[in-house]
Length: 267
Image (cartoon, rainbow, N blue to C red; front, side, top):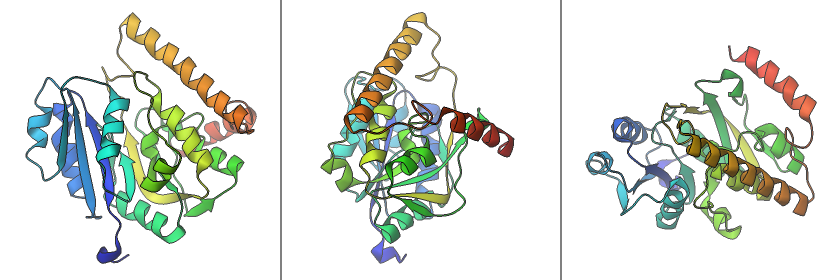
């Protein structure tokens, strides 16, 4: 794909007190082989040096006066994005150098609404998914099964066509954890075409004191309640649109066998 024909990719990076990761994240993004990137850092009311570090880079910075949460920061980023494609990047994770090159090329060549890349779980290897070849899916059951989105709804797995998000009014529910699941399941369902992409790996690191691993009892209860809320919304959506979700309310044996196979493959 010639540089002149490359679509603009908006990369939305919410940051809240992530000063120890900002430099490495932005260095990584600006070193991508795909150069037509719009990097949007949303400083979500950080109390540390996150915003000051980000200001040293040729990127767009949006500052929120107070901490509003990951969902709100992502929604703000989407509204500010000028790109034809949108990706959500967490500041403490990593991608391979050809990530956007391979993901954007797959969308351009197939005309798909979203691309799904590989996911490397640094802590739980059986939750690692990589694709061996580029392939387009349109069937609902196949899209849901190849991604197991009902189990692993992480939104950063996908590169979205911006018009697709607008068409289906896809946004993040604010004030909740487990926000990815309620976003990703409808996105995969609504996609008329979805392409899976080899050699595009996103590595997820589960950090101590992250949003999902904080130790306080009140926080754990909040996460649990929001998980129940997200699962209920996901199942309600599936019932409304008359489909089942592999690994959640259908295909449990196949999912367990796949997980065991994946565990051995990624040891």
